[in-house]
Length: 288
Image 1 (cartoon, rainbow, N blue to C red):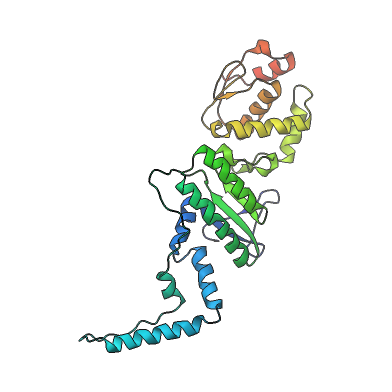
Image 2: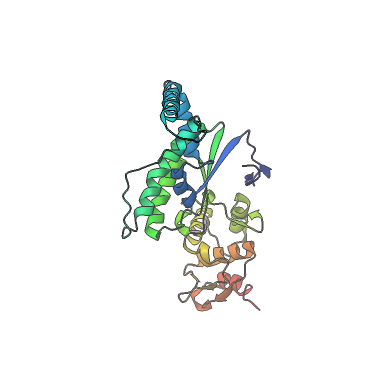
């Protein structure tokens, strides 16, 4: 994994090493491909270990190889035939995985059902095979899933997170953490949501907002509008827009976030709806 991925702790500015954690990466497509028992799949690794750990495995393999040799000797052929000895690798190539899910071309829940059946198997395999503390990195779990299925699949990933660390890379708001500090919000190579940022947010506020109020505002805005931050959004307090915020605290927080991200945006503000301190604060960010 070293050549493919680097996992860093931005709070300490240090990379996590394989001595501390073992990283397992997965996506929806990779999860489905696990059932093919390919060379680099976790399920193949687990199955090979299961076969080799079976006390009678070697005896069965020797018997099968002997029967194959006898069959070749009995075969009338001018070809110089020989038997390729069966081992765990060769036997796995003869095997398939059947979870008992009948595929229906009209059943759009088939993919979701298969993912939810395979995921617990992968979870158990990781917990069994991990040599150090595992980190399960899941790429874009929203791929090929409807919004409703995304909400449901998040619950499955949360169940996995009860037994190991899970990092989710997603562009879907449905996979954002319900806890503010559970979200890695990174822009320009910098972690944005930190304790220092929240302290500054409270200190710079034009009126006296509590830290809990500001944290809740950050959480709500991320879950509602994270997908719009990079699209030059229109922010408004008086009409439906890319980002519409009607509470003054939310308007303050979204402007601070956009400035911290260094993302472009436009304001359409009805200043009559704002108190004087907040109005004065917002006016300084009107785009020229």
